[in-house]
Amino acid sequence: MTTLGFIGLGAMGGPMCRNLAGRAGLPVIAHDIDPEARARCAGRECAATGDPARVARDCATVFLSLPGAAEVRRACLGGDGLLAHARAGTVVVDCSTVPLALTRELAAAFAEKDARYVDAPVAGTVQTVADREISIMAGTDGETFARLAPLLDCMAGTVLHCGESGTGAVTKLLLNMVLAQSVAALAEALLLGRRAGVDGERLFEAFSHGCDSFALRQHGMTALLPGRFPEGRFPTRYMLKDLDYVMELKESLGMTLGGMETVHGLLERTVAAGLGDAYWPALIHAVEEGGEQP
Image (cartoon, rainbow, N blue to C red; front, side):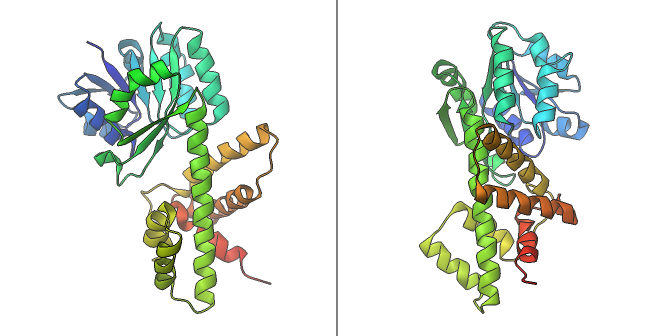
């Protein structure tokens, strides 16, 4: 029987692993450096281990859900990592958000061993992941996607095949780019409207009838309007990390993207102000500070 592996059992990876173990009908071996995260996933369908090499050795299909490029590189290319143990037919499905350059590097490295590295980042929140109310954007060949789709369906309500290797990674980065710019525009509108005497709640209610969006419902109504940016949700430093990857991508392609660069600067200033762990719509503080005329 095929054994599945899962590395990275944090706020997103933990619920994804539990859904995979509960729905796939296959045994799962899961690893995280945090013993408490491992304990939350251990159960009848899932064996938790403190040894990532066990996942690499014993699992032909391994899912990753890690914070960023450094962690993914270590898990894949470390001395006792996934590449070292890869064999013909091994598939690594990376649900992390990483730069396109790293995606291409890893895909080429695994291909040399007749294995597959699939970029399959996730869009969703810690509030919705347990109920599979997330989407996965996969970049791989059609045959590999067809084999993986039933497993991805165990974790996500929406599974999209974006194209060949790298297209999933790019799609996720551009999604976050658009989302960040949308929230920055909402922050500007809220601040300007309030300064002009418009009630913020009425302003956003009007927006919901004229330009309704995920950014308005998920971030405008619940965070910008009440001014609540709690830790424990997707933090500013993570959104900045993702936009760092977009900066790398656009520079590698020789493009200038004024709107994205402006929002990247807002996130940098928000982190510098000590709000790196706050929920990322906290960038409204940088918008407000930058909008004051001398």
